[in-house]
Image (cartoon, rainbow, N blue to C red; front, side, top):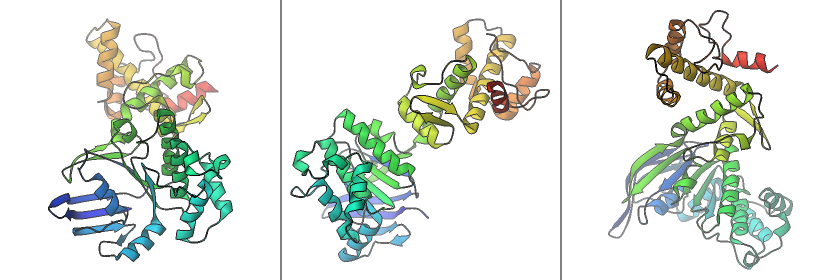
Length: 369
């Protein structure tokens, strides 16, 4: 069951069609980024998904409930139970302290509990500012309070409308890490942003233009080459008996190293202890398979096509390795006589096809002991 399901939804204000027959499913636990120019329908979509408005036509399902025909009172009760909001303008009550703003959110949901409210502020690093009014807090501090407010009632869905739009780079990163933590805890996030870098935190991005979805991008698939780049570097570092640390790694592409490592840790490929990295079983297997394919490709081009230029050899192997299936890799290995080293002398991890082959991950674990 999806967390949010919009089915042929339109929203019309007078002569203006803000959304035009939009259908969209957001799966439970997914992080969706919504982008588009001003007037494209982003805020309208969030208002409908957040039970702040009802559609002119079509149906809106939230957590398995059709809310399309709810009254204003029913919408208010439902969103208090299911949804947390984070806004660009923070929307904190100016004459209430940070703690009191959290208590107010609790009050409208169920019962105010000061101990729980303080714990929520502590989780976002704001416990020492609990008695301060919003006007005494920086923009980043106010946004962290608004995140604590959004999370205090443990909503299944979090809707964030330009959550970093008013923040500097340092506070932007802190806020995005808090949202990433909520996502890793299983929350469904729908985030409106104009910043493509911020959108990369999401699992998926949609583009809106004139009230219609014009493009959908699945970032997890687009990020695979960067993950492979990091895994290959980690394997090589360990092979050379060098420490596996952040400062030894380099990455190219839209993801920063920190985000790539966090995503890989979430997949169970590695573990981070401060700046030290440990490859886990799944990461070892993927890294070993990558190294094996690359070095076999280098040897194939070197022997068969007599490529000797190292730069060209590396480039051709990089292009070729990503097209190799496990079956094709085994055939190339057999064709080359199950070689032990690439043209540069680096060891090729044996595969299941090799005589007494253990597989790359098993060899790696054996050699590391």
